[in-house]
Structures are given as structure tokens and as C-alpha cells.
Image (cartoon, rainbow, N blue to C red; front, side, top):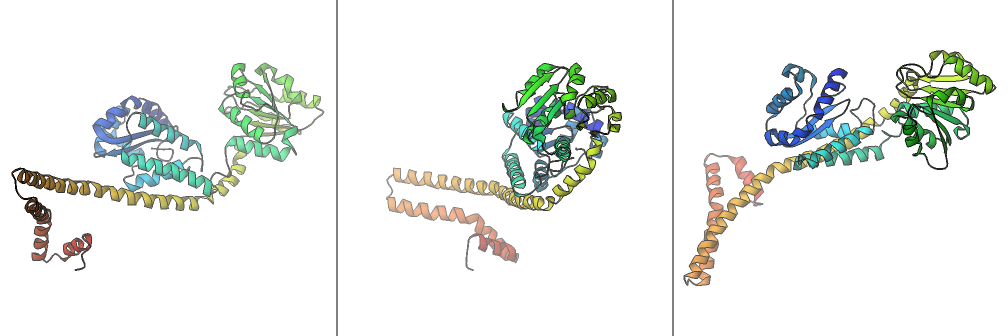
Length: 411
């Protein structure tokens, strides 16, 4: 199930419960499946399984996750055979994500696949479909524009800043917070040319950690949250991204900083929920304040550009799915070929053993070889000949044609 089929509270419950599945991967494999890969993220919980009994798998999952079958069936989706390959290729390429073209899901799938490998849960078919999907994702990202226009809020915030400042390299940036969002902002801002950073965080050790990721041609100063009012005067751009329950930057604080800056413009982006910057700051003439909601218009523009890349991406996936279907069909013939070969080898071994016995008892080698060739031929063609006669007697022309084609007979 994913963000399109199940509500967030159910996904959150299953994401936590699915962690308990990890020690049971080997058990599930031994009881229910030839191979199994578990994918668990905040937006999707998926099992990729090669199994002989889907109903038994659902029964086991329902009991383990404490979900009745009615709830389970209402919120799940099921793909089989080639449909699994098509779905997985769409997922890993970012076409099935809440944010079109996201790249994070590819890494999550690779980690899930690696974990299954470590638990011995990857069958031949699962290996083929996952390796094919990873190859497709790489092709989609290199041959289409699906990833050319990133739409993360951090990326959009930097694009907005470029509209306010003529040159970001001349600006000093204050990051409030040192979590993943702040770390991503640091990376994007450095790539955009910023070289002077202030990082204010409740835990300065964490701020020092993300500060070390910045190349040495940039300066990074780590501060306590209480020092924010003092450093605003030398800050051109503020990026707020903490989990603080109350605003850290207030209107009065910014007014004082503007006065000391002689009203040079300040750009502020609040990526926090709840807000870290008081909404009233937006009333100040020399402040450009944006929140997550303000990024929607810009996001729509980028989504449109990414959407244009969906058809060519889907064409790549369709071709790969067709290739996988051919491979999957070929696997169904392998058991038949192996059984046929095994039967012929048994007949060969029996005849050969008898020929060796005859040689041991002094029979002429030429006589034994002629006997071996004649007997082996008769035994190999006996069953096909019986079936051909039966087909002829029942006027089953199709079998006669297939047989003729298989043996490349002219008539």
C-alpha cells in the first residue's frame, strides 16, 4: 500500500510494524515464498514476493500486522508477473512517488534489496526484476528531464533567493536549525555560490557536524539559538528549519536588525512546521518572507516541466518491461528442457551401461557400437513417435505442425 491507497495514520502504523518483519524475512521465505524483498518507507509499504500462495501470504501478514483481512484488502494493491516489473520500474524511477521524479526512493529500494540479499531472500526472478528496475531508473534519469527540475522546498527556496539577490556569493546566510533540511539547504546554497554561513542550533555539536561538510573555501560560524538577535544585523538571508514549537524570530527582533542594517533587504524562508518566523515579519517593507505554502506556485511550474518527461520515461519502462516479459517466458521453458534432458540422459546411461557390460564379456566392439546406436535411437524416438501416431489418428494437425517446426523438418 502507498500514499494513494492508504491514509497516513495506517501507513505510519504499518511502517513501524513492518520493522518487526525484518527478523522474520527468513521465516516468511521458508513458509510462504521462494524470494521476498520488503520495502518500508513513510509513503509506501511493499512486499515483492515470488510465492506459490498469495492467499497464505495475506493471512500471515494480516495476523502479524494485526489487521483484519477486510481492512487489508481495502487498502492494498496487487501486481503479478510482468505487472510487478512495470510497477517496480515506475517506483524506482520516481513516477509513482508523491513528488514526481524524486530520487530518494531509489536509494530506499536499493537498501531494501541489499537487506534481502543478506537474508538470502532474493530468488533468481526477483534478482532479475530488481536489477532491471535499477538499470531502467538510471536510463530514465540520464535520457529524460525527469530529474532536471528538482522541486524540493529547499531547492525552490534557493531559486527564490536568486530572484531577490543579484549575486548570492555576496550574501551571508543564517541557518536556524541543523537537521536534514538545514543540511540540504547548506548544500544547495553552497552550490549556488554562497560562501558565508552562520548556523544557529540548540545543539552546537550537531551544527558543527553539518558545518564540516562545507568545503574549505567557505566560512562557517556556529552559534547558540540565543545569539540569533545579535547576528541578524549581519545576515542577508535566513533559512529557518527547526522543530521548535514557538517562533524563534519575531517582528521586533527583525525591525531592530533592519534599522542597524540601514534597511538593506533581508530574505527569509521558513521551512518549519510550526513556523519559526512570526508571520507578522512579512509586513516589514524590506523583508522578503516566504513559507512552505508560498512555494506552491513555483513548485507547479517545475512539476509541469517534469510532467513533460513522463511519456519518454514511460517509453523506456515499456521497452524494459517487454524485455523482462520475454525473459520471464523463457524461464517457463527451462524446467521442461531440463526434464527432457534428464530423461534422455537416463536412457543414455542405461544403454551405455549395457554396452560396457557386453564389451566386458568379450563382444566385438563394432557389434556393441551398432547395438548402442540402434537401441539409443529407438529409445529416444519411441515416445515422440507414439505421440505423433496418436496425433495423426485423431487428425490433430496442430501437433504435427509444431513437431515438424521443433525438429526443423521440411515436411
